[in-house]
Length: 130
Image 1 (spheres, rainbow, N blue to C red):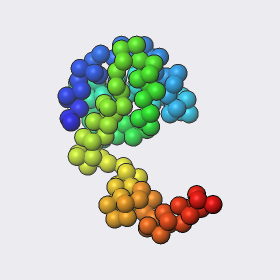
Image 2 (tube, helix red, strand yellow):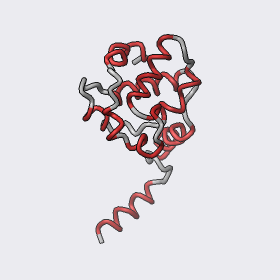
Image 3 (cartoon, helix red, strand yellow):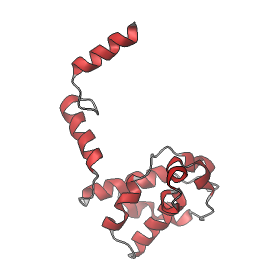
């Protein structure tokens, strides 16, 4: 879904900052742009034409999509859905990240995000049984 379809969610963010208290990435970096509030500000700027897609890519990938921000959001905004939509559009525009590309390739080829074959899974199953 194009990010434009999430404009209403982006516009509903009141920038209260409550999302920062539960964000694991914000806690590690202390960068407002890594909080949900910061991401909504970045995406608003993108929609206004003040930023380009290549300028926002790094921050959109610095999110675990854990939804802790939604749990504390007074407006109940699903920020993770907005971030995922932004990521999808970033990929369409050629701004996917290398880790995601590798995981997708591994899933296609081995059905395992780490690229391990079924023999590795079988060994893990055996270890789990003992």
